Each structure stands twice: as C-alpha cells, then as structure tokens.
Image (cartoon, rainbow, N blue to C red; front, side):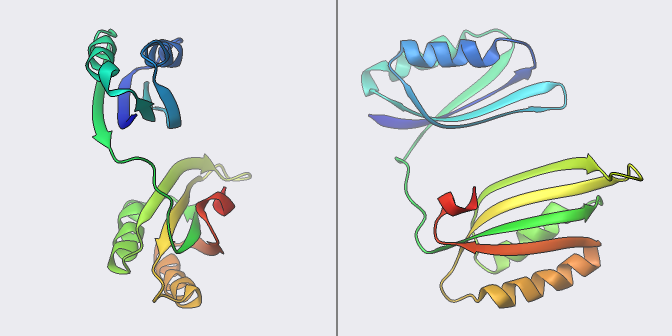
Length: 176
C-alpha cells in the first residue's frame, strides 16, 4: 500500500464528502486521516489515503472527473509517529494582523516544528469584539525548556494583546 495526500477545494455544496469518499472507497483506498472545513464559501478537504499501487492512476482520473472541484494528489511516506516532547499552544485575544506570522516565526526560530494548527475568529460574549483563537501542536526539541518557552511567549503575548498558554504532552494523542 502507498500513502497519498489528496486535497480538494471547491464551492461548498451538499455531497462533496460523499462523492470523494465514494470514489476513494471504490478504488480500494482507505482514509487514514482527514481534515475538512468550510473556508469562506468554499469547502476544503485534506486526506491521507492508503491505496494499492495498481489503483493509483485510476483513482486520480476518477477524482479529476468531479465537476467544480480542484483536486491534487501527492505521494507521501507512510504515517510516522512524532518522537520527543510534544506541546500544545493556545492563543486567544484581540484579532489583529500578523498573529500567525509572529508566532510561526518564533516557533521556527526555536526549531519547533508545527504538526497541526487551527485558527478561527469568535465574538467576545458581551461586546461582540472579534477574538482570534489559535491552537497549535508542535514538536519540542529536547534542548528547550518549556518554562523558558512560556516566558518568551508571554512577552510576545503582551506585544500582541493576546494570551498564550503552553501545555506539554507525552504524545500528540495527549493534546486532543
């Protein structure tokens, strides 16, 4: 079995997930992981699919035949487990430009690899002010101290007018 990443994006409508997963299943594919969400007026899907090599070409042709959806496929290595320490970063506060860029630059400078990130805007309960919410799962290199990371992120949080909390976990499963 080979592993493939399948991404699809198109105008949101009922039946997209059913149509895509039906084609994958009919080609003997198994969906191992997926993320699906509506962004603006479009629906976006990312899937990790295992598939017998003899079905690869046929699957790609069938997926490309779906109307009004842009689909890409890419071979990838089989799923690997993250080794070492894992941490979850939660950020909440005033929505302003550049929050993701500032945080991701900091993490990159510290060699903290982002494994998963989810962001969204919500409204404050009383005022209705837009609040930015972020949850990220990162690999924490052995040479870094979680307390130092939290302290440095507290300085960043003050500059951005947000709150940032870091939690350590033994594995990525502990962050869910």
